Length: 287
Image (cartoon, rainbow, N blue to C red; front, top):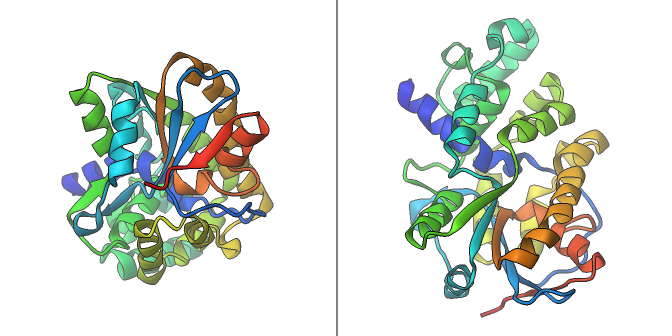
């Protein structure tokens, strides 16, 4: 159980965006996970990279163009700075619920969650009673990949940054992520969302990620049945807008490699479109 907790605590922040299911009108984007940001007074380009956060070892890849962009960058920027021990400690603390799930949820909710856990993980709700619902979601997300040899893109990027002695920064904190999630979903909505998680959906996500098909990837992640207007506001729009307010000053100082969940890049309120509206040239790196 200790190992399960450790894995879940590690995964919480980096799978956070897998829960983003926002349906918006999306500008047509080319098939690329990597985008170059230039112009608007920048002396050197920065890069945006859309991650899937975690993937099975055999499916893991990092294209040559992405490696070149990493090598050309002078600072790594993630949603949350997972290289910061304080953030990791906070994440582990928040993986534990303020009260046991058996007290937080009503009998119907507990029954539904127990069924989901048994189906996806082989565990029971009693075994995760001390976890937060966010931690349970992370555990289920991990299990739907169907493998044990998981690779985490953000952790790989951090290792690269450490080897080159690059600064690592975050666009938000673990606490702010949890707050967004709490604002977006009630307990019942969270459980309903977990009921929609399945291996087939995850397989489609991985397939389109390997093709760098950002448009189809966005459709995979933006299932309308899993998102209402409230969740869209707190999980996607507000976070993207906050990030685009921070990035200009950061890009003036350093050539950034910004790695965030792929769902954040596309859409009318996506980071790519918001940066373009702010006057930057944002173009796909094709090779």
